[in-house]
Image 1 (cartoon, rainbow, N blue to C red):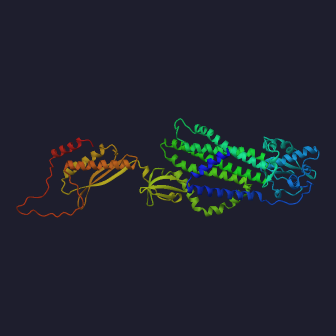
Image 2: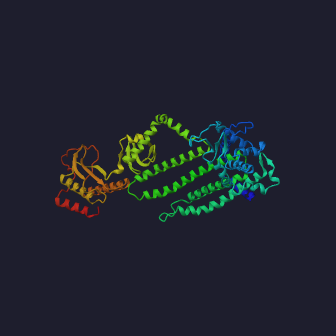
Image 3: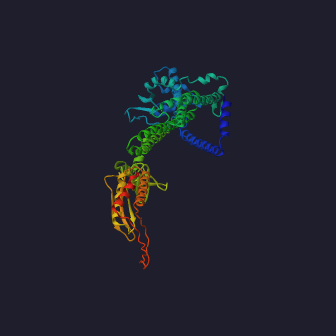
Length: 563
């Protein structure tokens, strides 16, 4: 089975490109460096040297004496058992001492004795009693009490040790030792052979369980993420990613249960447990982020059904806010696993908060600008806005900036603090889109024909399906240097710029057709030289048919067609 796995991984590695191989090697180097740093941080702790006094006068002497006399080089379980009440049976005390040490080792709890109080009159600040808990977070039921002038492990600790030992070693602490009794005790590089064999078995079992679990979990995830309305909304790649992440997380939990059976040295066990806890935390964060992606897919689908675009605008911001909270929780949990004092860290952050606020004035201004935009709603996603030389469509409103897609297809990122203080012209909120133009006709157009032409222009507006019928203006309002000007002022009741352009085109074409039907000549900027008629020549003045009946007939003929 091992050779088959090796062949499989060799094929996968050989099938990747050179650049991918380099990335894999670089990633492995970084992981190895991080592991080495963590190992140094967890293992290289200052420890007191020398044989302790067995006077049990302080919590330090009691804990240190218990652990010192159960080490391979100073193994004396009789002395280690003195940390329990003298009225108990000696064999029971020895058994309890050994089992408590195995619980520490199995959970990977490294006792930093230099942090244990050496004051004989130590008082716990929480309970205000003469008691000391070695691991308040991991083992709150294991603590020392002061009896007369000596510190012993409490009666509650004595009662809790059997249950804790069974919890840490569900298959027994000597399971693998009994399987390999003869040659398995030989040590190589600080570990016994049976421990190496156990590590290999756990790794192979983890790979096998991951392969099986990932395929069993995938249909469950697919069913949980499927909706009757949107059965194929969640992509298969996202489903498969969630299934594999959950499988790896479960495999790590199984490895943590099996790891105590190897009875690794406390430094190695502590390192392995911390690594498993950190990786498990990262997996939980990643799984929650992927689940958030699934919820966002359904949320965006639901928001598209509503008329308001405000919910679509809030979705990206809401997603980033939730992601920040999830990542922050993951960082706090990892710091706890590394035994970092979170309370002190938070206090330091609060003290430096003022300096940080002063240094990040622009960031805070942009944040409040975002809140102003969300509350005042000056624009929404998809609106056409114009401000400060920027003209385009809003694509996204974030915590810091707003992204605008210009009509040149470029992206403009505008800080929200600046945008909140700028005059914004929102074309997207227009109820109607104005169309204003000037129609210029030649000076020799008769007044009666101008009146008929204006009447036809008004009819064009009345009959067009996209125009506003309750308000428009068409008037002969100017006599410019080269033309007679008619104001054409109308509105389109459309939602998009494309529909507006389409309506303008139809209107302008109808104006051209009307002018051609009535015989109206459109003017353009020119310079005309008029020469008086010479004797014996005919006049070059154009002839206009201004007969009322003729003009009415021509207008009716024009309006007879579909406008």
